[in-house]
Image (cartoon, rainbow, N blue to C red; front, side, top):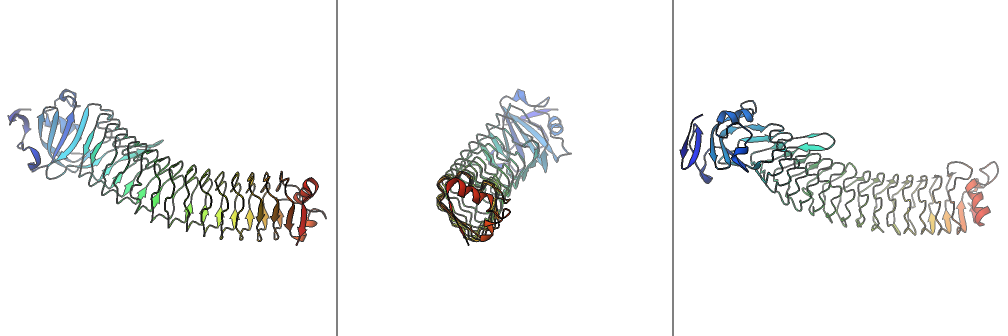
Length: 451
């Protein structure tokens, strides 16, 4: 294809070269480490570039091309989707930028620039979506672009799975229009500190997982949905506020060891392992009614939290937590191992409890006394290994340990001096006391009060 010079530039095909901010038409600039490394036969061939971008199939074709040193300027074109894998593993592209009065790129396809490890600048203000695919994890448009440090996506609404995952040089990007963060969209962006995403309402699974320097939770003010591990292992997060969040999918803040006093004023439930390993967490949760498996496991700084509406805790909900003298005024159901190995626990106030699960308080070595006036059912080994326990009051219990035999409900509690249970417990085992009561009497000389 013929070309000619204009102001020292090479111009090919129709159109005219206009430099700087005065460019009246759309233009996509591709900057290379060396013009010889472009992925087409001829950098100055308009047809080569239109074929490379699969135009017009993926949008309106470019109308002219200018070669300026190591920069290819593709003018014209509109509604373009940069197709999947187009620049994947390309180590020669340095910048991709839209310039001019309007934009030509609408969508960046799945892994379009994935592992283009020298890409430093992406300026695509007209792009509304960066696509990705969820395989073993999210792999998206700019996945593993480890040099990418400057971005301009003012129109971007959706960051798909893995869209910017492992872009470790991103620090404070701004995405003012973004509403949805896809699975792993910013996963392991270890350079991220204070990204600006004021419109984000949904963070999918692993959205910011492993962003270890993140100090500001993007979109927190309006976020309503958090997927699993959405902020997992974000160890620099301290006290984000999520005023609109009512539920999450579990593991959302797993391993966020820096969390201290985050705010969740509308959160109604805590999922599986949501705050597990948050060793500095001290917050209270005003509206939480249920806590899932391992919800606050190993939250060693949580001593006297307030859960005024909590009604149910499940498997290992507070396993290894730093609880000392908590009060749960609405709690009715304590699940299996809910308070297992809470070594600092000395007392618990929960007058409405009706059920204590298997090993519910097992190995709480500092717990000295318990009183559950409405408790009907107690699982095996519920208070086993509570070596500091001296008194227990269960005046309404009908099932102690699951059977009438010895179920190790109080096994190892050698300091236990008194137990209060209903009269029926005195003869429930074929005319003899329940096996757990008999063990206390024979092993430790515990005084039993029947009411």
